[in-house]
Length: 420
Ligand code: HAM
Image (cartoon, rainbow, N blue to C red; front, side, top):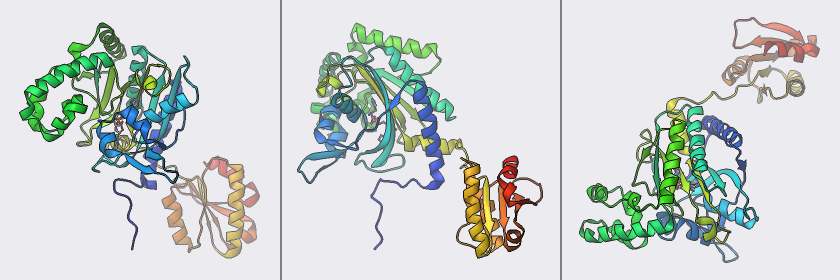
């Protein structure tokens, strides 16, 4: 019986990989230009790490984690996101102690969600984190960086939403007011919301149930509980975005699905992908590092969902063509094939970085030329018995009207270089 792929986990095939590589290239170069350094952290962490960072009462921890006992009896979890691991790495490696770090990483994340378009159980994130920066300037710079990424990828129609979640104390005050309000309307709540009332009432604001829309619209807002410092932080962020012309909408009900956030939160959303509309999200998490046992350090970051960004790139048709080889070598007859093999290696020495493809697996000239043409090569080199006897190859430009010519084998690399 044929083995099936795991539900919600995708193969990225060569036809799509060009878009992925383009995204990775553009992102890497942008991250570096803003001073971010790459780090790589494990895919597996102790389950406890995610419980203590993302929060016990979040959907992710309650029902979406791939958790198992390894052979040593430890409870491990496939990372559902990258921030917790990056923070753990900074603590484990003594990288804090008053230092600052601008870091990024990439890789697969795992959440046992109900798969649908744009929502998978294994998905890739590009994750950016700034550790040790307290001011709103770094929040704004991270948003500017993501805005620039959309511009460089030529993506239109991604909209920015921002909000402030205040400090833990401000949120606790708000939570009381919110719970009091929701208790007064308990009868109107659905089962999911009633369950959240105890553990995570703020998430009720994020409910997609249309029957709760009016109730949520009339709920008290966190904005009214923000203290002066949080308000100033939010105002400065907005002023910085205004100054560089990045448009945004203040969404007072943007709460995010992870518990570690404080003050700034943001999300880039699109109407082009159906229900899964967030392509990039993040925010500040000033309390998380201390909460995980590191010394108290402010931090902020974001992650983008690569599948969703690639889907937007493909929709917009903004993906460069796959790189084509410079040369495709066609050969017929065993001695010519052997000579062609050696010739290919010589050309690879002489033209480093240029694609030199050798026809493998034989075939008549017609079939070989069809492959040469499909490869997109600029030039085909033809080596048959006759050419071999006379020490020449036929040179056939495939992308111009110029006719076929002959070239002595010894002069080949130099002649080819002029054709490319
Ligand atoms: P998140 O909102 O859970 O935040 O995920 C970030 C992004 O990953 C989302 O905006 C979305 O594009 C993508 N994503 C999430 N779940 C899925 C899924 N099941 N399938 C496909 N794409 C998905 C975080 O993960 C935080 N760690 C972000 C952050 C970094 N905050 C501070 N630093």
